[in-house]
Amino acid sequence: MHRDGARKSIWQEEIRKFSSEADLHQLYDVAIVGGGITGVSTALKLQQAGKRCILLEAANIGFGTTGGTTAHLNDFFDTTFKEAINDFGLDNAKLLANAGREAIALIENNIQQFGIGCDFERKTGYLFALDEQQQKQLKDIVEGAAEVGHEMTYVEEIPFPIPFKEAVSIPDQAQFHPVKYIKGLCEAFLGLGGVIIEDCRSESHDEQQNHVILKTSGGEIKAKNVIYATHIPPGMSVLHITNAPYRSYALAFSLKDGKYPEGLGYDLIDPYHYYRVQEIDGQKLLIAGGEDHKTGHEEDTGECFSRLENYVRKYFDVETVYYSWSSQYYEPVDGFPYIGKLPGSDGKIFTATGFRGNGMIFGTISSQILSDLIVTGSSKYEDAFSPSRIKPIAGFADFVKENAVVAYDFIKDKLFAEKINSLTEVKEGEAKVVKYEGESYALYKESNGKVHLVKSTCPHAKCEVRWNSAELSWDCPCHGSRFNVNGKLLTGPTVRDLPRVDTDSEI
Ligand SMILES: Cc1cc2nc3c(=O)[nH]c(=O)nc-3n(C[C@H](O)[C@H](O)[C@H](O)COP(=O)(O)OP(=O)(O)OC[C@H]3O[C@@H](n4cnc5c(N)ncnc54)[C@H](O)[C@@H]3O)c2cc1C
Image 1 (spheres, rainbow, N blue to C red):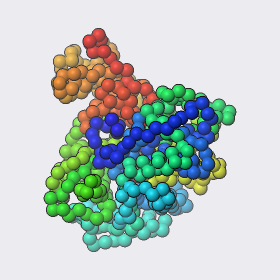
Image 2 (spheres, helix red, strand yellow):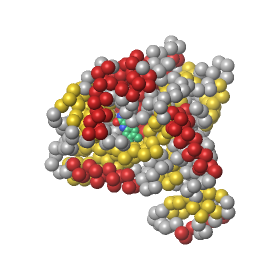
Image 3 (cartoon, protein in one colour):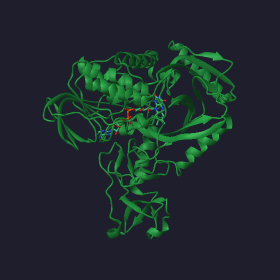
Image 4 (cartoon, rainbow, N blue to C red):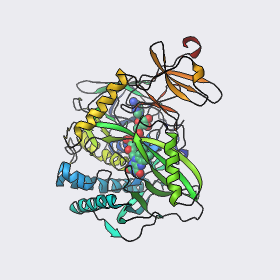
């Protein structure tokens, strides 16, 4: 398996294995945990700065959301500049704008310096309002952008066959192939003497006076600093309350009329749809994304694909859908990413999370921020993006309460545990959380009748997992941990599998 889901993304054909000769007994300067865009970019930057780095990945490079993204490179974000000004002040909103520009420049610089072929192209972005409500939103977006010096221009036409009320164009956005890009970064990292260990899960850390000991599935590793670039850090911290996991869905399809829209497109529906074109093996494909929802909060995730496909078929002359996949991202409570010292750490452990749908950018800027923090001790972004900040913005209490109440409900009532008496009630191809003699189990029956049974309580915060039919996974609705049908961990924050149950002996 190359990705944390059962469906194949448009990028994952490019994933390949990396392995280094590793001396696990030496003291590394920095151990970076997580082989997505955040971990790989950060490992390279630190290695370039002269640090001896080791990069650990639980599965393979690109296994997480970086292998399931859509890879638009925007310097405007899901958090609008208007919202940023209102909640964080004009200076911090300008800093946010700067992070976008700086991240795209960092990517371009890496591509040039290391000669990475990753289909990087500059593109114009288009934001379009489909009704009056969205027109008001667009006006706010444009006004906020002007205040931070970001160019957005009203236009009469957009390159998408979607009827719209009003639209703006945004110059100098970009796109690339994310897996080709991080593959190139890994090669550069190895070339500079960096070490990559795949199939190595970090299970816990012990922060000592001068170094950190990481307990991993491959043994203990010592490093002066540790970075959790795991999309959400493992273990339990305030970040699991201030971030909520969401799923988003993407399709890549050919068009009968061959009229592929140039540019990157976004409507302003909540949740919004996003569009871009990618060429794979000489074939142009239009990628459309959307239908986002909180992880574990959609009864039938397969329907999210149907809804997305029905929506795009209304406007585009769809010929063949070649790829359909979904992936996970994290919503921060106050709209800004969390990049810096891990809350609760003495100062040797760092993390980066809360990227919303802009993790190509925030993952990249994390490499600069985290390397500055480790190499020089400070970063211009450290206060604005501090993981320890508690920003009591409007909606903060509801967000936290919702996360906490969800967790509480799932522990207390096991809401979705259905009482059934025998396995025969689960049809082939179906999955259920079932109760048996007071215990809850997650049960999946393959189309050939083979049964997979695991304990259904997520080891992280003891919430009950829910079935994700689109990716054939058990997803935790509380903090986003995900497991395959055999209970094998796909996505943290937990570091443990769901215990497997021998069906012959227990039920
Ligand atoms: C459908 C979708 C579309 C998106 N589109 C865009 C877009 O167009 N533009 C954009 O900017 N952003 C987009 N995003 C967001 C962006 O893709 C993510 O924020 C970004 O990929 C996160 O990268 P990462 O490296 O932080 O995490 P990941 O790519 O998830 O990498 C984390 C890695 O850590 C590993 N790991 C986890 N726990 C451990 C452990 N304990 N030990 C060892 N390894 C571990 C995982 O296996 C994984 O490989 C999108 C997100 C989704 C879901």
